[in-house]
Length: 144
Image (cartoon, rainbow, N blue to C red; front, side):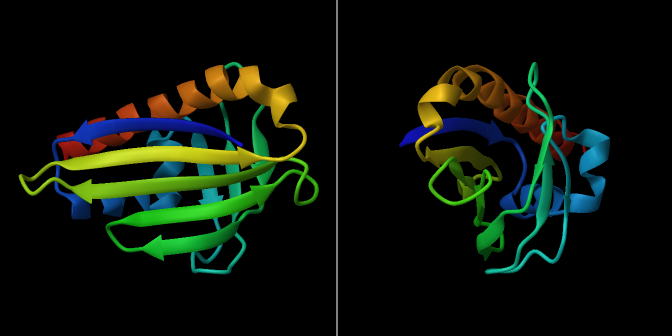
């Protein structure tokens, strides 16, 4: 297993950060990593997601929503071709710090036989994509 994890503190209430994060129709206006997300976001539903890691090819996939807990957590599980080859469980976690700020964690747990082949891309491109998205989310939440 391999995990890529990023975290940022946002000077905005958790509800506000969640509202921006789950306004999927607006992703193309601010989100440099997740270019779009479509479909009915509900546990066990499949959605369509397009990611664009910096310095790597954009990719569209159809993960299954595992958790959608308002103002707390959103996660999905996607596969490359079929389970066990290259699986990614993408997780967004929001923590209310009790002082009007939010800790936002974006992480992904990767499993599968192809993980060693993608290690450098995950460590560099995927991490940069997470960090760029986190910064833009922070910027958007703090300016509104």
